[in-house]
Length: 162
Image (cartoon, rainbow, N blue to C red; front, side):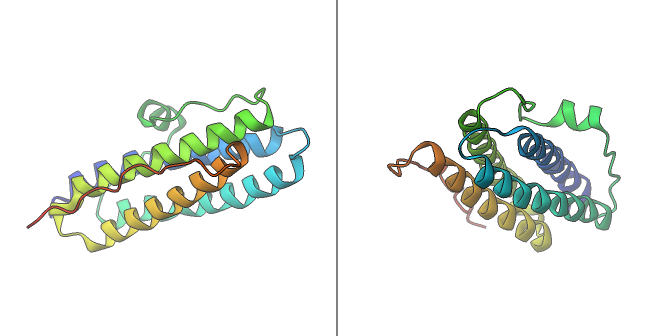
């Protein structure tokens, strides 16, 4: 098992998760309009869950012997997510959250492939749980902006034969 490689992958997940938590909380504070109550409530549930996930991911890195350089500048350089724009409309925020969760699900699928050969069931399980959650959250947000149900998740990664 290449612990350093796994920790590097987990740091990417940590940076994206932290960025999404901050974005979700920013939208929680700044949402306005006719769907205020439901979006405000849903974002609170999600940023709370993301806060717990940040801790779980960071502790997994530490359990594998890696350092966790949890700085804004480090996360900002590492994340593939855009910063929140608090001036967006409620529906623009919702679309951004759907896209951001979809991005994270896609990245988690790639990260699962990267650690597949490392025989680290704990990390694979953590990444799989996160992927499943972000798939669901992306779908939930997408239903706000596409009420006809037209939505597709990224293709699931294919399991390599050993």
